[in-house]
Image (cartoon, rainbow, N blue to C red; front, side, top):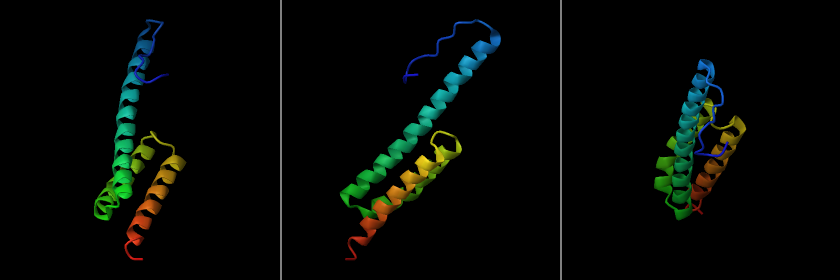
Length: 101
């Protein structure tokens, strides 16, 4: 279902109405969690591309934690979250190793 579109309820049974309401609530919670993760990833990526290793270091742990929480809540698939974490860690490690050379 496209984002922002309400669930259409054809039947007026009590259980159908309750299920539709639960579905809307879950979608809202999932959207908030997904937004939080994406924002954290974007902030970390901008710090890495800017070459700011201290800011990237401060953002790395909260970002990885947010990804783990999204995996636990079922917002992200485990493999997807682990792929994000791996790529972010590799980029951060390259940034950290660059001044040493």
